[in-house]
Amino acid sequence: MTTIEKQLQAHPRNMRYVLTLSVIIIALFIWSLAAVNLKDIHQSGLNIAQNIITGIMNPDLNLLLSVSKQSVLYLLLETVAIAFLGTIVGAILSVPLAFLAASNIVPKPVAWLIRLLLIFIRTIPALVYGLMFIRVSGPGPFSGVMTIGITSVGMLSKLYVDAIEELDTKVLESMTSIGCTTFEKVRYGILPQLMSLFLSVTIYRFDMNMREASILGLVGAGGIGAPLIFAMNGYKWNQVGAILIGLVFLILIIEWISNKLRTKLVKG
Image (cartoon, rainbow, N blue to C red; front, top):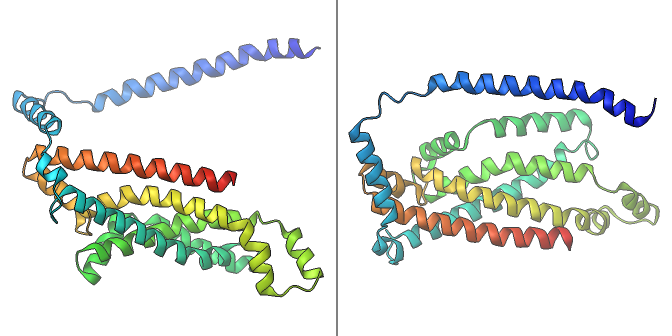
């Protein structure tokens, strides 16, 4: 039997698979429509939705463009500082944990124990860490920095471990054969292989931490999140629009810069 005949015979089975999958997806979609309830939508709700859209489309330019401590620019700068310092703290803590969790560096029981610790760290949401640190050190940017740092450890350590376990050990064996010290092996054998990957992952995490820092303000951990929720609770939709415009532009700029840096690091 030729290859073409085999493909022709397999085609009907593939069609049955696609048809079955499509039926399941459509059935799940129809079932999920039962959760949609349009009875609670009244004219007052539609008016509120209209006010929200109108307010966001007409932002408070004084709040957006001024340079006071209550302005959007100042709060965005504070949010960037929280995300940046938190990322640095997380990256510093992640490096030793990553080496301890790498099975090609330490014994496997030790590596699995550290990995369980990292899984536990990743399991707890950022808002829970934020509430914990606020209880310890009080509300403010410091709580945000520590929260971002701890939440960064889980992801950064995991990706650092993957990079460490893919190390080219032949280079280290060659350096050992010529009598290199441990410091020389780390300096000239390990760091050149890991540095660009570590920096690329850290920049990517900083991009994510910008969004985390914006949300953490909701629980009083500094940044722009608290003024945003206060403006929403007070129905000041023009202030909400100004804050959202500032956030969107800031995220776009940081994402563009981080993509450029990661591309340069990966491609060299």
